[in-house]
Amino acid sequence: MRPSLTRDISVSSFKEFYWLKEELQSFCKENGISASGSKIEISDRIETFLLTGEVKKPIRKSKVNNKSEPQVDLSLNTVISDNHRCSQNVRAFFKSVIPNFHFSTYIQNYFKNNNGKTYRDVVDAWYKEEERKKDPSYKKKIAPQFEYNQFIRDFFADSNNQGKSREEAIEAWNHIKKLPGSNKYKSNN
Image (cartoon, rainbow, N blue to C red; front, side):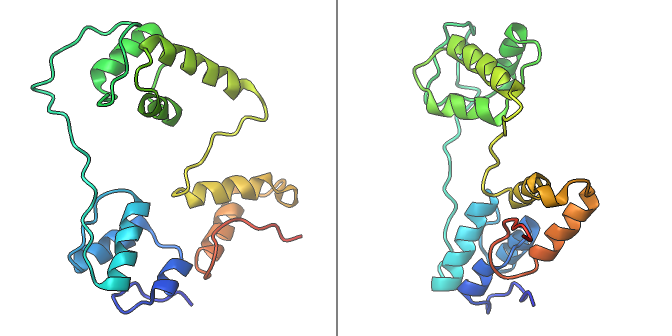
């Protein structure tokens, strides 16, 4: 039986069960903990609180003040800087070069991890990723905080579930998330 998320829950019980982000945020608000950030960040703050009673502050990312940032004409030779932002201006530029452009997770990560490269390199990376997507074996990587999405993908990848409906997959998810332990899909072989 899944315990209630209160300040009396043990750390091991907290870690054993699946919690919705809304439940985590509610716990934070009740206990004076910041409820901002990703589910992983919030869970880490709650774990620290349960272990030590310490209210851990969120890591603040410095924001660039748009008003003081000069308007730059963007081109394929624009260099990616370490304070690069995926702004509407940047989106408009890339849409003028790539009509179906959008800020995919892949492209956002490309910007984060490729300081010093140019927008021309971003365009090349975009088209290479689009080619990879055409491969029937291509699977978009699912980030660890999206346990539900990973479970549903793995459910349908199991040959035992061929012909099963999305409702059956969701029913299986709703069952496993109430149990202690991993929320990863396991085949019933």
